[in-house]
Amino acid sequence: MEQGRERGTPGTGPDGTEATARRPAGRLRRGLLAALVAAAVAVPLAGAAGPQAPAPPPARLAPPAVAGLDATYAAHRANAAEAARTAADHGYRDRAATERVLAARKLLYFDGRGAGLVTEVLGDLAHADRVAVLVPGSDTGIDTYDRFRATAVALHQRLTREAPTGVRTAVVAWLGYETPGTVSPSVATTGRAEEAAPELRALVSDVRSVAAPRARVSLLCHSYGSVVCARAAAGLDVDDLVLLGSPGTGADTAADLRTRARVWAARGAGDWVGHVPHLDATLFGTTVGFGTDPVSEEYGARVFAAGDGGHSDYFAPGSPSLANLTRIVLGHTQEVTR
Figure 1: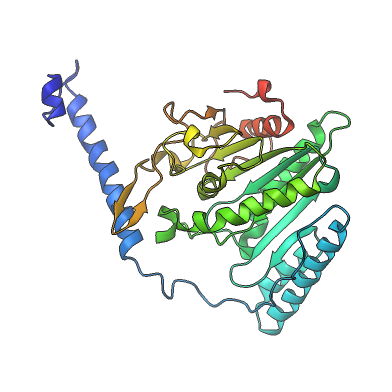
Figure 2 (figure 1 turned 180 degrees about the vertical axis):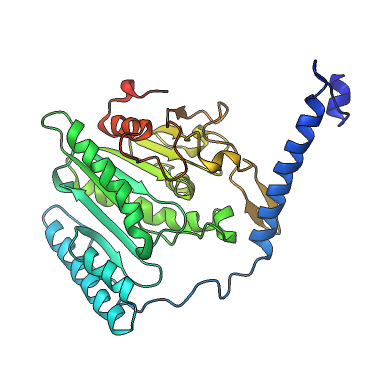
């Protein structure tokens, strides 16, 4: 019987259903992977993006330092305000409104060109003992930034409530790369992640140079953002690397990330990513798919409870996932529920 299965002969379980259950599942996984390969290789990218609001180039500054942090914030706020005026002058009213709001926040970086890049700080980064860096997934830009920022706000509020007396916290919302579209060839490959990885390494270095000495830094990576974090992970000076709703990282195991950080993973019961085939294939020099499921036993991450939420619910107030993320960032790892 076992030899027959290895050669592809249908096997039969006690109820006679094993072979028929396996065949459709296998065909579905192969079919989905084939669709990803076809999209990534054959779908043209030209003309995919719509018209972009004009904007000035970003402010050119030295890497941030504690002494000049306020000046860094001010320079990027001024650039966001100029971008808002430029967008308004060219009829992009919604973009202008968003950029005017951003111009009132603590911006570690801002670039209004194209889809836009924003790095915002919540809390007092210069004195923080615990810092969370959030890395978003697909379809995130200035026009959708508030959706991403809401996750940072939810985490920052809970950290503020639960931090022990004397422990200071900060959250950095890092929209520091051009994210792929959810329905696009680039979302199924590591190309955008490889381009983003050096920028994420630089951001972590900047955070380390500004935050309190020996601050605990946690990298929280959502969806395609987990691919970015995996590409940046080797030698990265962070204490925790958290993969949320990850389609895979392009690594077979957590050990393959070559990081000293604790590697965590979670997936909500309602997250559609659980139905994505965790496979990869190479065609015409393009690797499509991200391999091993990060919440699987063979990957080797520390899997924690995320509740029944969907793909966008990991930072939902009151959720098990937000409670566990707060514990990880604060260093209360023994209290994380599995």
